[in-house]
Image (tube, rainbow, N blue to C red):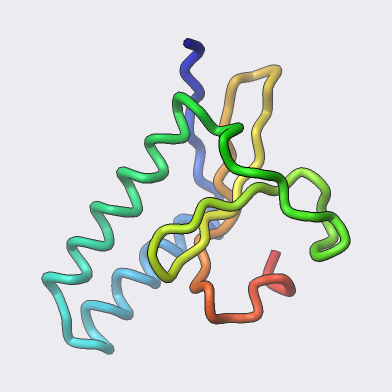
Length: 104
């Protein structure tokens, strides 16, 4: 089985740290923030071996035609697959309750 490289965009990195900071400092739940940090990393790493397992988002919903989504609890990881380079590009990590369609 071909292993894919995982690359996070600047936006995805910022999203990740914003999520952890929000849970840790706004919700005052540092232990839950640590659990979410670990969970998100682990779930994203699983894309190394099977990034195709999640469907492409309907292009009628968003302006891009090749974005997939991985749901992790209340958050959605949006990513693209570059088959030629065997790279999974993580574009955003957004709270599922937001208007994520306009943030992509």
